[in-house]
Image 1 (cartoon, rainbow, N blue to C red):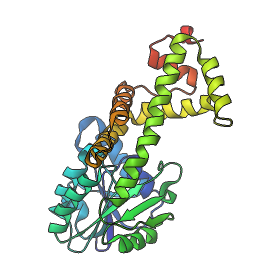
Image 2 (tube, helix red, strand yellow; image 1 turned 60 degrees about the vertical axis):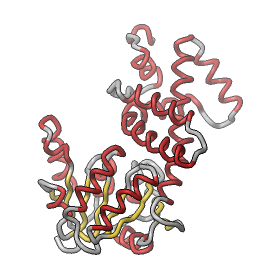
Image 3 (cartoon, rainbow, N blue to C red; image 1 turned 180 degrees about the vertical axis):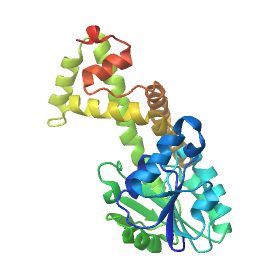
Length: 290
């Protein structure tokens, strides 16, 4: 697959970026080899025209551009495993949401293999934007990586000055606010619902922030946490590492880890309405929620 593209991890982000790619690509995802998820992952490969690989090494062999899109807790292992098979001078774009120091450690493994490590931060949800999602790129090979990403259809790539870890630092510190607001919103509306005062609380919030539409925002934030809470918790653990390394304090972000994990671990399918989401999270029946 000379000159091809390899995806390491083929979940939500990998599939969004592969959709309509129109270029030869391979993918390796460990869920392919777990019984309950194998069929669905094979179907993902077929649906998006990507060749599934049996191993990480088979996926990256001959690839000039490798996109790493695994969960935050698996990012270092993915880099080490990829280093055993990646080609000389290939670009390894680490697009995972991890701390700067985590990325720098991964960079050592990739660079020792003769390839080039690139710090890439995905700065918004991948849906519906897909390859139009904003990306920040940093590191010695940032300019080259930006050209390569643009060539395969990424339309919003920006190089930021600095080494490996700069793009990640921007993403991590931004997540303090983004994921933290999600957690605070969940804590607020769950308490308001349990106390029977949700309408009053929402009205008060809307009056304080005209146009914010806190009911809609709560519905969206709960949806994201119910679907992605475990992944967000793993990312926020990397945020905590980032803040602790800076010495600025991480108390609020530690709370965000707990709230994201608590909701994500419930493995609840997000219902269509805020009423139904709150009922599910509070363990109420449909009759009680009505």
